[in-house]
Image 1 (tube, rainbow, N blue to C red):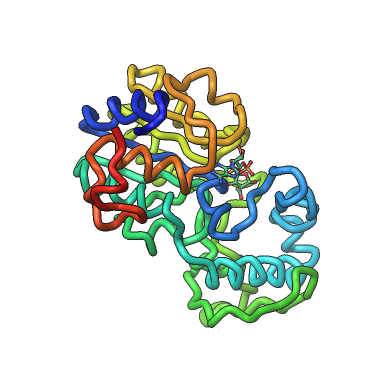
Image 2: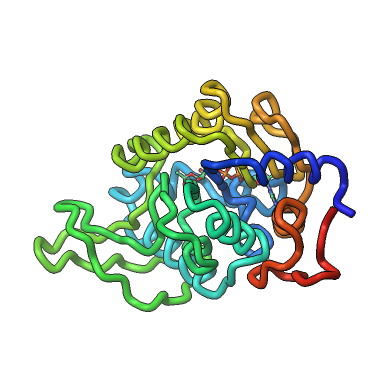
Length: 268
Ligand code: OAD
């Protein structure tokens, strides 16, 4: 039997026509990809964002920055989607008018079967020239240690240094992606926010826009966040457990894509 908050959330999900699933680093935590701000394990607890994730840092020490992103890319390449990513893909399969909007630069939603998730903060897998912006092919990830310098490759057209295709502090989000995300949030009837601290803007606006325009909001997070204020239901716990439980409680336990599916996995 699903616990009461899961049942309440499942009721919203089962009746939703247009769903936005808005995700942050927490959804990938159980795949072994570190978050940014969690105590002890968060990347920004161990590394200096100003020295690694700004245009100035890349200009001053491109090999340090490229090496750090190569380390992150190699970690993500070894990771596999978890039950939370699979549950998100199962929601998309059930609700045709649904969209994943992620702040994550990993590719775990895609590998779980999500169709064209919007990457608000770019991707580890889309490097481009830092001078002429031409997309650059990425080679199989080297596996540098987390402090190792690796010289970035050079652009085939202009020989400029290739940079990671992510959004750095001080940079604007890709306008078309942000516009599409805001548009989806404005038109949805349910937004599920998963594994984000809700501290980074403008991304954190997205659940707030949905709530303001009348959508119901479910939050999945073990911790309290500023998004508690807009959530109709707070599911406090890890997303790899709670998202499958939510899907099973909404539609029964027979979704073959979900771990633990089958009659014994059915929630109430
Ligand atoms: P944060 O590290 O700020 O927050 C991660 C959230 O995930 C926290 O609220 C945790 O409580 C929650 N969490 C941890 N484990 C979880 C689990 N197993 N299941 C569900 N939730 C869990 O990461 P983001 O909110 O994604 O920006 O950070 C937003 C942006 O800040 C990132 O996209 C990145 C960073 O600087 C850029 O790179 C531009």
